[in-house]
Image (cartoon, rainbow, N blue to C red; front, side, top):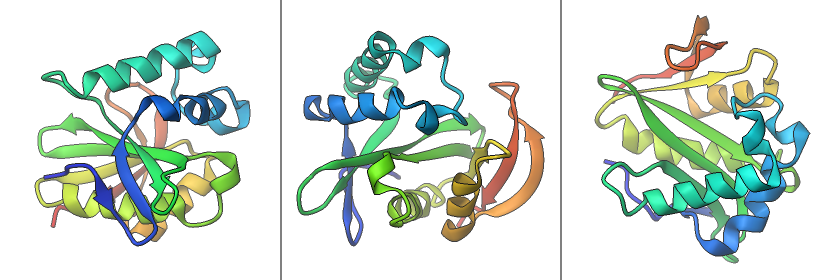
Length: 169
């Protein structure tokens, strides 16, 4: 099963730490970064994003941790983005990935997501839902090895999205 820290060739996937808050807020407060994501309006404000950050960090020690993790440069431990997953259905996980503006276009999401998905598929099918117009996210899913399954209604959010499936190993 998935556990952190997880190392890839260039990155470390690890829990959020207090030092990550400024980079997390930079992502959450950037309208271009969040325009395709299903955050509540309050979560894209400074106070709301900080509350979300604190909630995720405090969840790690709970019985129901939020599986949201930092993608950091291996050499510097600098925050580049985040990835994570959540149960979607019995035997199915939904994964996500996001990268801060300065790190986009460098394979960060692809490398981190591939490592995460390979561990998750030991136990389950993994899905990624993308906003239909989020071409960058769709490209990452394809590069990782997900198969496009058309536009589907997300059972939890009620939003329509492009469904990508990575089969169980």
